[in-house]
Amino acid sequence: MIYRSATLDKATSSDITKILQTHKINSIIDLRGGGESLATEDKELRGQKLYAQKLLLSHSYVGKEGLFGLNMAFLKSGGQDIKRMMDILAKPDSYPVIIHCSAGKDRTGLTIALIQLICNVPKDDIVNQYSDSARLLESEHGNIVQRLGKLGLGPEFSGSDATVMEKTISFIENEYGSASKYLESIGVGVAQQEAIKSIITVQKSKY
Image 1 (cartoon, rainbow, N blue to C red):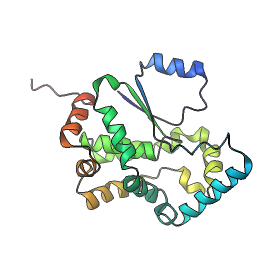
Image 2: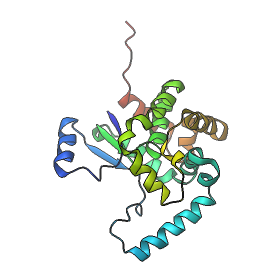
Image 3: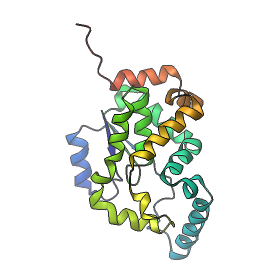
């Protein structure tokens, strides 16, 4: 029903066709910001944008708290993106869905965790799946480190340590009460959450 992916930018048109046909994908949700792709910009503008990003990151949750800070920042400032994603997931004809960002482990990992939390997936399973991201991205590790280095971020940002997701879940519970309450705070009501849950979970028979 839901696939977590890294960016699809490097995929060829035949790759995309194969992915869509094999898994019968109906929706692709891209969580990246509009300015993340710098490849087509001139060098001067690219340099200015990188400097601005470095400056912002050094003074943000990310600069002070690492990957956990990145999650906090996305929860606090990315509510509109998360709400738009949930709006799509509440519609049965949206599925199957691919959700991705750049590496598929941070913004995507966090939003997948929110979905899992409202579906009552055990926290240990959520943490274990998140921490497995680094292994699954091993072939891209060098590229990720290089990309993050341009933003002034160290190689530790390329990982997915279990403690990051543990702290993130604790933050959600301490700050908002629960994942469900967080989603309510950004406009995803209980009825919408229940609609998503009913679509993507298999109900156990009473018999």
